[in-house]
Image (tube, rainbow, N blue to C red; front, top):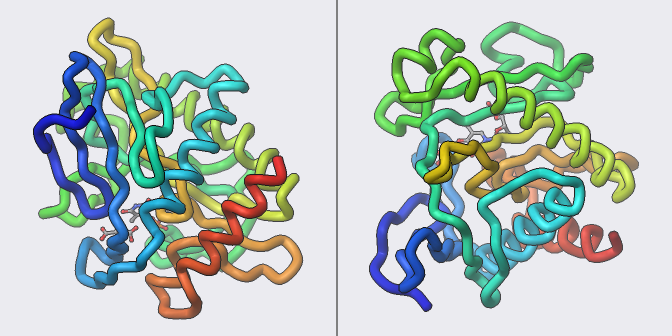
Length: 235
Ligand code: TMP
Ligand code: ASP
């Protein structure tokens, strides 16, 4: 199925396939934080994120959200549609934590209702800076309509996933999405949704069930990712 390696990121590799317009995403066992400054390999992480992201994308399909996901191929790989990735990270926040608390001096756990949507420019050299709509229009080939569409889709995905995680006794605190453009111009959800890209807090204990355990060195990454998968398997 896999042909040449197209791209290697911090947590995934992307391969061409023999079918035009279809790619293989291969999840690595590496975890990085703070723009690659902190790094560690965790046996089993690739399998967990592949499994978790596949389940979440399938759940989104059931709710009418279009994504690049086609199917899970094996433990660490999935087949996706090729898209032109828009170099904007779309972050949705329901509760204040992470970079927004430092940037704007907000108290931890302040509730954002309506949720706050932020754009970050996907650029490792610049450390993925926060940008506004005008910056996005200047820096990328995204159109004003596409930006609004991305914001709208991100908020819809937030509703769907907040409800899903609520059922699992988990608060969806915040998360990051990436969108891609298909050849026909439509914008669809791409990349992954996993504990690498979300903040997930246990409702009862408020314990962190996401990559913050690695970022902050406060727990066992594999244990908490297993916990997320276990709960998703109950849906
Ligand atoms: P932040 O509070 O550090 O800006 O992160 C917001 C959300 O985005 C959080 O759920 C983690 C996720 N995220 C990524 O997926 N990739 C990144 O590079 C960063 C900085 C955050
Ligand atoms: N900044 C990313 C994160 O903390 C990872 C990285 O850039 O190395 O999620």
